[in-house]
Image (cartoon, rainbow, N blue to C red; front, side, top):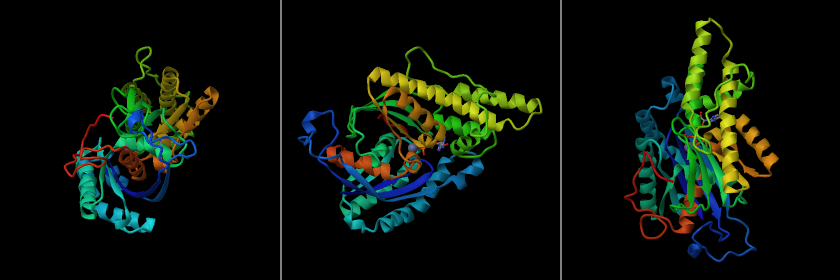
Length: 367
Ligand code: KG4
Ligand code: ZN
């Protein structure tokens, strides 16, 4: 099956062509819908034939963050060229695809609408099924691109600019109920905290990669910040206090006329974030009894977080799956993969697997 994926939920205009080879093994907690499982079959396999990403970073960095209206206009300008490029690089003709998968939410509604309207037009013109994908389900499916052996049930830690959640993944069908959120941020998402702290330090947007690099030169002990764990047993997160802590620290340094504290702040902030993520992931693994963890989303590209979870999981005998950085941050290959599972498992608001052309864009969307 060849799937065109389209992603425009934030500041990347992305299109990808993915070949999915079905092993007839659809992950589903609903046994009735499962085809007979044949032990001789290997797992479904994805081959990313093209993965085109047009970033709007340069457009938004002058504002210190994403401006939704500007994002929509740039998606509109870029989308057709990005899709043409994805077909060209994949070396296939548009008519060869079997389905069009597109992010339907959550994210910036005006931005999502551009991808959604384009996907509908292509699906309608080529008479192919339209598959609306939940962005976070896409991030989770990104872990399977390079690791087809990753099989539910597993725990996913999804960390991005809009989300910070621990998710129990029992299936990948796209059906309500195959994933459960065990804990989420009560205020800022981790990526948002990275971006805000970077702004306070004058590092520019997006801050995540800049803090990742700068922290390597700093002493995390020099500027220690509070680790907010919330109530005993809670798997929720809170990062807004940490952001305020950093702001106060930086202001006090400025008032004292001190300089060259940025690397220490980056290192101290990052270590505080990672301590919390590591502790909560450990607790969630204990609660679920799962021995498999997938780290996904833009912040999963962070080198220190990757290293810490690798160490943690080696110690506890847990298998860890992290996509390559290009599949951690927003991309359309992950959307095509999530769309594949939905198609294979018959999810959609029209009859059967596909969505209807009335499919909407959503700013918020339950998993
Ligand atoms: O998944 P993503 O591309 O978009 C959303 O769905 O939000 O995540 C973007 C977020 C941004 O906040 C960005 O600063 C952060 O991921 N990020 C990183 C790194 N690379 C991207 N954060 C920390 N370290 C990184 N290396
Ligand atoms: Zn994302």
